[in-house]
Image: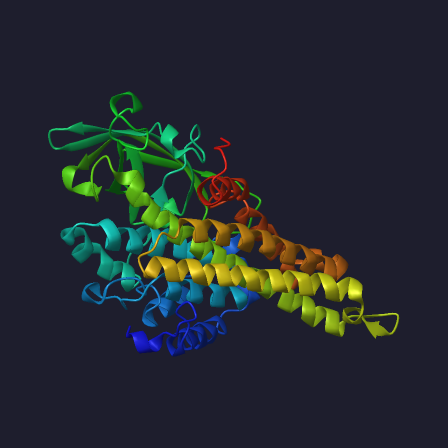
Length: 395
């Protein structure tokens, strides 16, 4: 993309509006019933995904020499937010598990062979990804990883377990995060962690679904690795230095999650506004009352503010800056604002807000998840307090 396509407003320009128009056109083809089937019944959104591939969206952050569009996080967040605004519920998760965990990770840290083999398939929609990071004992404390990849003469033998892993059943490849050196053998606890390109269909990889009460397009799984062999060329990036490389994936993940939250919150409020304009009580639309107007206005303004943080964070990533602060603040503010917006959208609808026919109850449930993952609101605040404000470490 040439610099003339972007203005100085965090990358906004003609290309951004074209992306929005294209995303809106795609979204118009899929109604609430479609997304309820995707999120409640795990019907795979094959047609939608192919439309995204045909539009070049799946390869937005893939370099042109590997079949992509050569754009960046600014474009991905614009795509995701627009889809969410237009009722495509769960698209943020779809984008995180494949374009972020797959395309961005390999574009940033993959070997030339890995890039040539996998990036074109990620860009054209042929391949799907997932990431195996979270563990029962570690949770947000990634340094407590128990999954261990023991180096051997011809590669690695992996043993361990992962939990709350999205979309393993549909993934062709997995970004696996494991220790390759025990904590006792490294000077810094942050060393000795490696990223791998793994195969979730291998016989030594077993996974079981985890039930949740949140509608989502990807199911959650617990994974067990039992003497799983990885070849030496499965390493992504630099062995034992994977945690630092993972940050190049985590910040985009949080920004994409934040963009989805902004879009979902606006979608819920748009539906609340429509209902408040049409629903009459005591011979007047309920939207004429400040008890309805003011909370909607507050929620909308908070989403607008969060959107600016998303734009700043995406612009920072694409311009090679340290996006940690912006990504964490954007994720915190967007997911909290989204929950507030979705909650009041349900309240505006009254009893109808709990009916699946109005869709806002699904948005509300999904918005609750955003305050937990990726990265809880409490961990976002910890980062801001310590890394931005210079306060003592609190955990």
